Amino acid sequence: MKNITEVIGTFGILPVINITEKELAEPLADALIKGGLPLIEVTLRSECSLDAISIIKKKFPQMTVGAGTVLSKSAVDKAVAAGADFIVTPGYDEEIIDYCNQLGLTITPGCSTPSEIQAALKKGIVSIKFFPSELNGGIKALKLISGPYPEASFIPTGGITYNNLGEYLECGCILACGGSFMASADMLKNREFEKITQNCKKALNISLGFELAHIGISNSDKESANHTAQVIANIFGFETRECSASTFAGSIAECMHNKKFGEYGHIGIATNSIPRAIAYLSGKGVEFDENSIKRDAKGNITCIYMKEHIAGFAMHIVQK
Image (cartoon, rainbow, N blue to C red; front, side, top):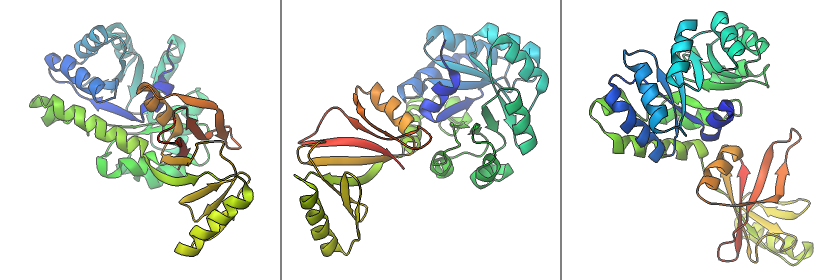
């Protein structure tokens, strides 16, 4: 049985869609999958919402499908019967939470205050919908509110756009961002499925946030590395900083004390989330060297190398 929280966190994006015509369910799901987002929260706001969930699960059983805007236990039953993998409520509803817990069903309740978050945590809920996010202060408020609750992860929903998506996903407390920005009502109405696919890819790129972190330069020993770093520092006015296995010139040139990773060196790529990046790149066939993993004091991966070298350079991803 798949861990729904891990699945959602793998992508960092949760499409939250009101499907108003059941004929739209299959092509929409297909567009999301082609865009790299095989998951969706179908809000129960239309007469055909349950039919849409059923159609998606039958046609694309690999897709993770949630039922949103769930307001009663009977709605939970109907959603599960239709094939929903998880439940989302707009607010904190103890009765529905208890019922889902009894069923062993993943539920993400909507919370907007510390009291509601604490209540959810006491129920064993660690994935919490922060709703409506922007009206409740957005990422600035969420950073403050989440501080006392390091065990909680949040899915902010409401007011998320491409303009603020990156800022949200750079925050460590964010599991994923929910919204319909990749598939608006007008796009669905106009059957713009290719555009939806492209929007999903754009959202994923923002979620991963890949960018150059630094260039590594292989050296034969520590003395050579320090010399290389000093030469670069002198040219550009950088400071040098010696670490256990390398010496940095500024933040862009890492002069290695050996040639362990890469004949000529390595390329470091920074990302918003290493777990998301590993899942995404693994799906593209990239293999990782498990022996290269570095972790922080909390056990989180901070660096991992890919197995394949390119033109004599190793490549690794690092946590921003």
